[in-house]
Image (cartoon, rainbow, N blue to C red; front, side, top):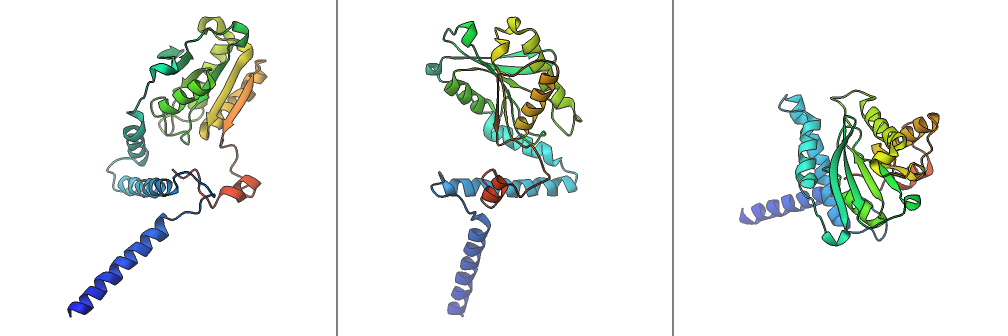
Length: 245
């Protein structure tokens, strides 16, 4: 009996181990940095997403609010400021939209002064200038470019085009009244990741219609279309699930 019981426990442990490996394993590119850390985070992000859907069906709380709260607790509470970066960081209002500005302290001539307007990602429903603070801080430090992060309104509380309107308002204001913000209007970059990349591209299109010319577009894995998933980038990276976290 003891031998049979021990075998059953061993088989159970092996089954659980195989199941966990099957669930958590994801194919990744060669030389991928910290693959098991990525797989661990990706697995739990997926499970938390499922848990949020389950709780919403029970009317305990909404799925999106759970994800936002966990996102803020894991990222938004952590703000690192390195004095050696010599960045001045402050919040202000542009119209009725809150922005966070990261400004290098070194003197730069007006002709060479470049400003980047950054729209965060998050599927138009997640993210904020708080949860993206470390990313935009790092971006401003690496580029030594004045960076304006926009706190645009999110779905589902605010219907389209509320978020786009906020992004467009800030961008137009910096072009139209650039002297009030110490900005050179001929060197304004529009940038964003994921959904923010979509917003940056649309804002650029609308600004050009208004005769304003962005200096550059910097789009980080932008969400641009959902019609053709057979393009080379999709075929190459779909199975690798690089953006799963």
